[in-house]
Image 1 (tube, helix red, strand yellow):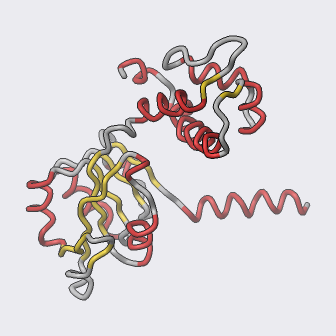
Image 2 (spheres, helix red, strand yellow):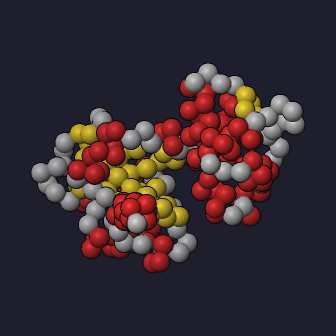
Image 3 (tube, rainbow, N blue to C red):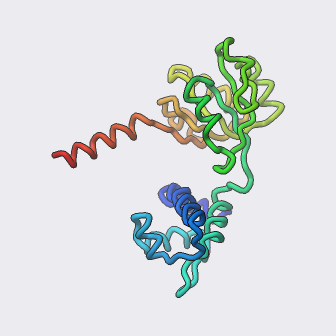
Amino acid sequence: MNKSRSVSSSVIKRLPRYHRFLGDLRSKGMYRISSKELSERMGLTASQIRQDLNCFGEFGQQGYGYNIELLQEEIGKILGLNSPKRAILIGAGHMGKALAMHFDMTSKGFDLIGIFDVKPSLCGQTVRDLPIHSMERLDEFCRENKPDMAILCIPRSAAHDVADTLVKLGIKGFWNFTHYDLSVDFPGICVENVHLSDSLMTLCYNINRIDN
């Protein structure tokens, strides 16, 4: 949607949270909700919710509220979840395997189509019916299958070189678990840096505030 190009990143980052909360409400059998009730459940203001959604169109009806199923589906379309992109996973260690086996990527907008690792002992094994390929096959695989996104579960020291290779092979975005900020080196590429340690340290800080 062209209109979304001018929407702030803070609004975009709240859309998945709206999608998740609405999905929870649907699972409980709810079919309608007001912006006030949704705001109370999410810890936002009703005004914030209305402002966020108005960036993309008119979804609610005064005196009625929001149709939960319809709103979740519309947010899913805005996020692009109805047309999953192709993803590959680089690094089939403990974290990489856990993501491939237990994380539902398809419902989040991506289909995992290939897994790669540098360790010969891992190559040939399968994870959810996908074989683990040697990194030597990466070039051929990408040229044949044209993946859109790469998940990086590799050492920080390898992140730049691997990302550089993947960008040259047409990768448009990274879900990056390497603790190396790829957005600095590749400003034109979509990057979501996942720093689990940052999240844990933030939690530590907040707990300390409560204790003090």
